[in-house]
Amino acid sequence: MKRVCLFFAVGFVLVACGHSCFAADDQPLTRSGPDGFVFCSDSARDQPVPLYVGFCKKHQVGTLNCGEKVEVLSREGDMLRISLGERGPRGQRRTNLVPASAISRQPDKFVPFDNESGVPVRSPDCSQFLARENAPEGFVFCSGGKDSVAVYHSLCDSHAAESVACGESVRVLSRSGDMLQVTTPPHDFARYMEASTVSQQAGKFVPFDDDSGVQDKGAPDCAHQPERNVIFPHAIYSPNPEYSEQARKKKINGTIVLSLTVGVDGRAHDIRVEKGLGYGLDEKAVEAVNRWKFEPALKEGQPFEKEIKVEVNFHLY
Image 1 (cartoon, one colour):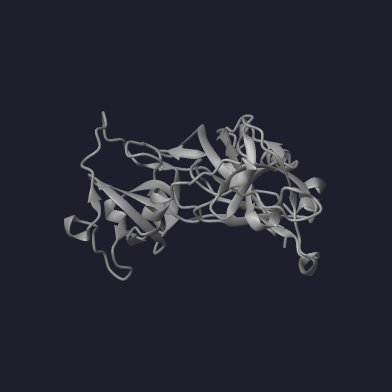
Image 2: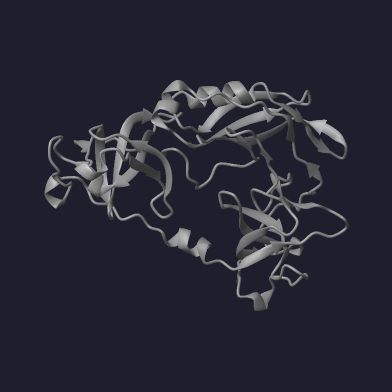
């Protein structure tokens, strides 16, 4: 997928919100949980405890220090879902996962959050995730000298949301008429591509037809078939954001998703946080993107305002 990689702190890709992994999982949880304490054995005193997001596919996004107090919300397999008191942009509680063996009910000795602790037990459904992981691989096929092909948010979308480079690997979930539902890297959001642009083989075009084994959901019921001749906005100047001191101390890593409107002037307007990290990084991301400059969207050669979503990646190395 086309993107501009920036020095150590930020990457830019055009995306829409979807299932993905960020520095915290925003959840509409209202119940308060008991206090827990990060427990480190004598041999692991100098080793911080890893902090994760994503139960079905865990990503480490930070660390916790020995003795640190957390709020324990639930047990999920061999993990505990905890809260550090952060809230998302819409007031959702920010939660993370930590190994259950690293959190104690008492600060001075290890007492596990077992069945007697009163913490609810949850069993997340990973079936959709596994279906995507096991979907057949396809390869982006380009013709006519193109270096990328269009990707759409929905079957009846008239504007391309992003583009994927020729030869890039995707996962094919289903067919709907002349469109394929696919997952595209880096975050495996479900998107749509024209069936003529995805091949079963990398070296030559082999369509995902009836013999491919991909589920056929039938042609989409759209009021009209839109023209797909829009050039999406792209950043031409994207200075790095700064790391907040709070996030640096906590060693927070992850991705912020912002929605904004790119005007015909090439500037970002109406910037809103869709998925945040907290710890002062949301504000730093907005400040940085407010300075970005874009090539505006074009339709038949004419610029027009277009709402997009961008990612700002924060990583400490």
